[in-house]
Image (cartoon, rainbow, N blue to C red; front, side, top):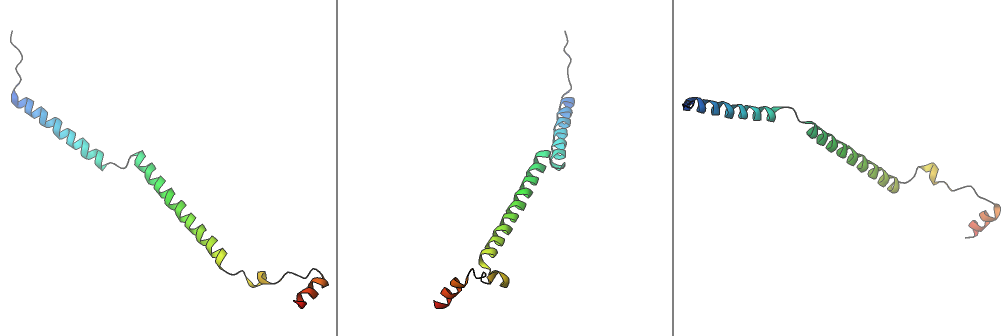
Length: 92
């Protein structure tokens, strides 16, 4: 019985084709657009950045509200409740 003999050159050529194909597939995977997971991570990072910016703005507005003096109309004294309270204030 004679076994089928395979030429060593054919084996080397087939191994080279498989290796080159694997390298091309890897290169293709690396150059493709980002996967859905990458897009999700990028969108989540953008959302966190927008939320942080909004919180900083709200904190700054709250700080400004506490520090700044109210407008002139808000600083007026309330109307007197009675003549007795007005007399008491003038005596003090």
